[in-house]
Image 1 (cartoon, rainbow, N blue to C red):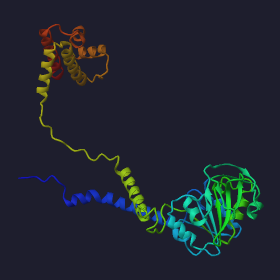
Image 2: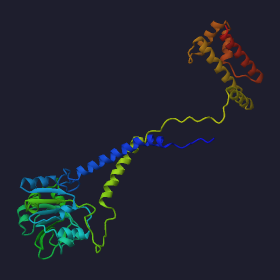
Image 3: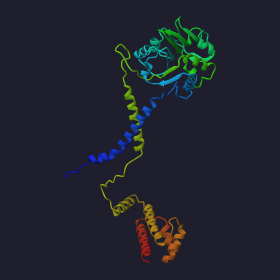
Image 4: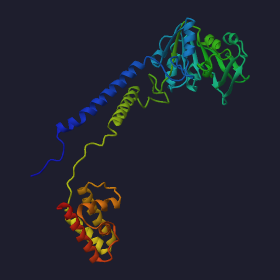
Length: 380
């Protein structure tokens, strides 16, 4: 007759239903948070971020001056019809060359590129190139005839600088490279800004930074504030970058599953489960254990240890029978036992606390005397 050692389907379901339920709830909560949070932008230079590196102060300043600011991370919002509107592209993300070409073809009236990549410059601001060295972050005068910069005056700028074609207006530089460049590209006004830090919450109140930001960005009543992500919306066969390796939806699903696994790990990590009884391979009786220990004592001639074990056992019985505390002083133990048994206290002290026996015969005599004493306690 064979015995099944595996779990039945019902037992497996009972063991897994709670973890599956917790995982499902965690995934659902993650998806809800992702969906509800997708309408708001976050991170560095975000119009919703109040962190020092955010730009919530600039967004509030623009709205106070009648500019409708729409923050988005959706690539389709950056490729809509942009006639009569301004598009601000924040730093970060990694769009393909075809994505930037789609943005350039959206016919925006005004495009502001914050610390753009070389792909963005090729597609939207041709002729503008990044300099090899960065510019120290410091107060600088405009040094140009751009009205927006001239009205703002001195601003705190630095970081990435650019060289511009002769047709462009270059401001806030060292005479060769500049951090703010304005040019006309196919009827679209393009501003290239290499110092987004100038317009962050931490620096907006310094020098003429707020005035410069308002004059550069607030040129139209509608502003789309786009924060690029790590994938766009399209690609073509001629694009050297090719299609994105990881689709956007997979990223969110992976984050949701990772969060669910983290919750389950915390929930189940400290549980060791019930104690599993295991039958002993051999049952050793107490008498056999005592006999084996006695043989070990005899082989090693450990009469002192054998005598100590016998006396400790006898003292335990005496203390239990007479109600003597286990940590009682030897004098108190001897006095109590002598009063109860009528024996000589000196002989009792030698019997219970004396020197180890000198030979095996003395050890046997000690064992016999202790047995007699304990028997007297049991049968007074």
